[in-house]
Length: 285
Image (tube, rainbow, N blue to C red; front, side, top):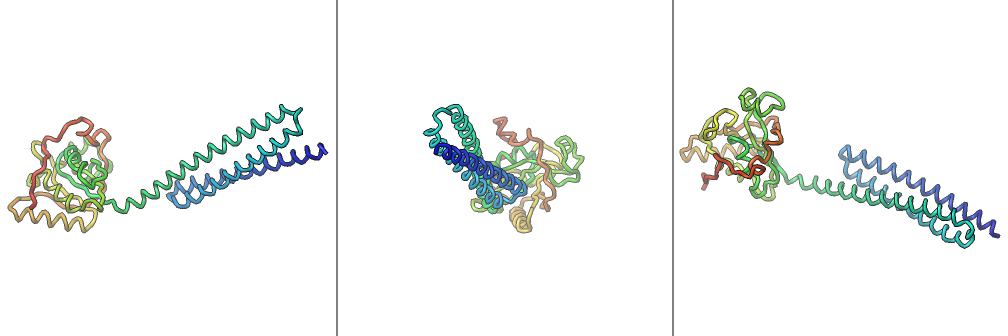
């Protein structure tokens, strides 16, 4: 009788181990598919593959738990084989630890993908505006805390050279303007409000300069990314001209915006200083 029990138990150990290994391989396969989908930008497909990964990881763990149960029963019949039982327990502990760790890791990846899916939904409310109004440090400083603005970046636009450097732009060799890209939430603010603010934080009557900073790269210019932006900018410019102001601001279709070197980003914030030449002056009723 004991011999039959021994054979059955050993057979059970073998089957559970094989099944656990099989499910583990499938879990790994679906996780690799999830990584591939994620790298290709197919977040929803990645999420589906991660769900399958979790399914097979849980199945693997269930079979490991069954192995524990069989080991527990076997103790009644293998008192003399403590050494072998301990080996089984060590292997089971190690396997369960590995798969539980993988399960936690996959759960973390799922949360990341879900967050990115939600982020994709949020981006439908984000739009871009690009303004040039003199030294970009001061322009960014005044825009970055405006309600509805979610991000700013200083850079170069309106020139002829790809990926220009600060030195090249400053030497006026590339025809770029120092500018600020403003990302804003249309649920909170509007392009019209930002465009008004643009006209009010610099002197749009100065041509090719702002204060003592002289050069065409310091020009006043609005780079529109949509026809609706162009129309809004033109109407605001006309309102100021009707007030007797000689507005020199150019309104141009945006071409490539090249981010400036890292040390220029958030310059005044990092230096804990404030702009010298940019300040708010109310120009609209």
